[in-house]
Image (cartoon, rainbow, N blue to C red):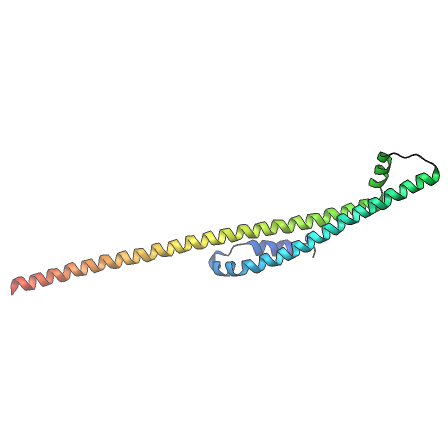
Length: 167
């Protein structure tokens, strides 16, 4: 997958967004989204590890080749000279660039996972706030019902007393 693709960026933005009108869906989908991006992060980590290994192999091969050529030509070469030749070799540069790209992809996916963790925390907090609001509304309705009941009792009691006094 091309992680620099605009479509991927839009998908990530959609996946980490919180839809406040449907918190249940956000909670339900959270685990599968996290698992999907986690699997992608693992693949990206493996690619970065392979790219790093390729750098090490190319570096070793170039070092040996440079040493062998210097020995065959009867030249003395310093470690610094070998290092400079390795660092400027096209194959080494390409391998480092491939590694940097793979490492960037892995880090980006780790950041998406962090964003999903933050989303989860926010959704849970929003659900708790929503529950508290519902409780408050229920208590208000109960209080109003209780007040109405008290008014009705007082009125009934008053009528009862007026009927008893007149009889």
